[in-house]
Image 1 (spheres, rainbow, N blue to C red):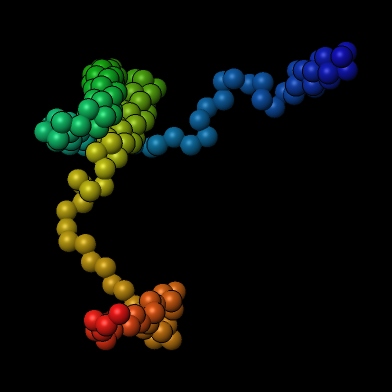
Image 2 (cartoon, rainbow, N blue to C red; image 1 turned 180 degrees about the vertical axis):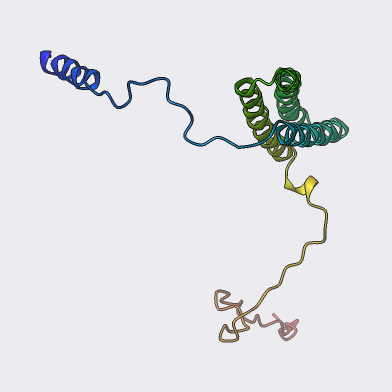
Length: 179
């Protein structure tokens, strides 16, 4: 019983001696080198795409309501609620980013741009999940085509059908009236 406890203490001691990961003030190894105008343009593009996704999910909600399918409607409503929350946070981030651009605050601008980028990705996933709530049959519009190719070596007759015996249906001769 004491061995596992000693093992945990021992690994903690080794972790405390690790100085490579101890510096918490490491800068990002890779940051986007975007100008303030480029971040603003990209953020507006993301916001537009998120608004488009919101409209699509609202359309899916209308479709689920028309179908009177409560399971689909609950699923779409859940995604719509999350999506609206992400859009509210994105709007606040956009406002903060505009303030950071006007104050020439690069760190805050990049932070808010990163938030908007992540929220854009989350909204995109929620849009796909909302489409999955409805199902593929409602999303894909087009004719289905099935091509069947039969191997010519397969016999045409059904080999699993033993067939029925042929019954004799001829009428027997009339019985005589003598007894």
